Image 1 (cartoon, rainbow, N blue to C red):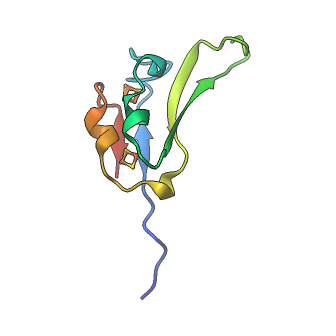
Image 2: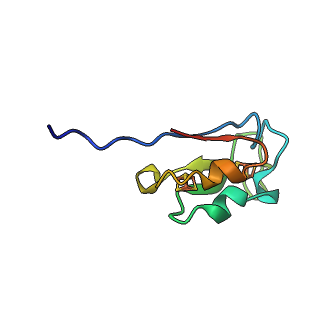
Length: 86
Ligand code: SF4
Ligand code: SF4
C-alpha cells in the first residue's frame, strides 16, 4: 500500500541555542557547516522592541526538512544538545 512519505521532524531547543539559550548561533554555526543538504538556516528574530538594522537575537531553524538524510551530523556536532531529528 502506498502512503505518504515519512515526515522528518527536526527541533531546535531555543532554551539552549537562540534568544533564550546560552549560545548565540552566530558564534557556533557547527550544525550549519556539517549539514550537506543545507536543511537549516540561521536568521534573526525580530520583535517590535528590537532594532531591525542590528537584531540582537538569532536562531537556527530547519526549513528544508524533506532534504534531510537523517545523517545525524547536526545532532552529534551540537555542543548544547539543542537539536533533535526524528
Ligand atoms: S540530520 Fe543531517 S541532513 Fe538532517 S538536518 Fe541534520 S545534518 Fe542536515
Ligand atoms: S550546533 Fe547547536 S549550539 Fe551550535 S549553532 Fe547549531 S544548534 Fe546552536
